[in-house]
Amino acid sequence: MTLADVVNTLLIPPGIFRPNEGSIALAETALEYNGKFLELGTGSGFITIVLYQQGKRGEATDISDRALRCARGNFARFKVQARLFKSDLYQEVERTYDTIIFNPPTSFNEDENERVIKNIIKSLFPSLISRYISAFYQWRNSPAREAALLDFIRITKDYLTKGGRLLLCVLNADAIYLEENAPHYVRISRGRNTIDNTLLTVTYR
Ligand SMILES: C[S@@+](CC[C@H](N)C(=O)[O-])C[C@H]1O[C@@H](n2cnc3c(N)ncnc32)[C@H](O)[C@@H]1O
Image (tube, rainbow, N blue to C red; front, side, top):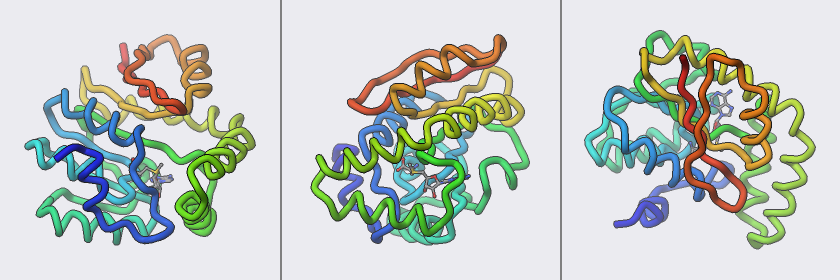
């Protein structure tokens, strides 16, 4: 079964993010690492399910109750016994991990209604139109998102074990911004590219 097949077997109600090429790239990259992982913003639970199926162990979070319900259901169907908890980024995270994985939202300030509406629009419209809608939304939120991503990269250091890494899937333009503006103690290397996204591996000196 390919990872795209796994996506098709998940139960994903309207309003929950449907795993895309970026999610698949993140899952495949995370499989290269051992140790305990943390997936922030698990959505349908896809990445954590793939990792558990391949014998990796870790925990998953989301800020959204709706997403947590969806992930809990999918975990049960795939017999994944990962701890799943509600947290706004690292707010409820109390330990360190070897790998932290995040496919972040296009806006860090969106509320549950915006999240649900955005995901429903994406699922209703043909892919080309929903691509234009997403591109507009992404462009409108660029400055705030880039600043939030930079902050996120800084604070992640406190939640990684020594030698650990952050795997982040960002828009191509954001990848350039982060490479140019990351603090000196951060090393960013590029992984797989999709049409819209770049996978970044972030480590800390
Ligand atoms: C782009 S989706 C990615 C979902 C999943 N990781 C995947 O790749 O299929 C972003 C997810 O992050 C969650 N999220 C948004 N803001 C968050 C925050 N501040 N803390 C934790 N999760 C958040 C959303 O509810 C959503 O499920």
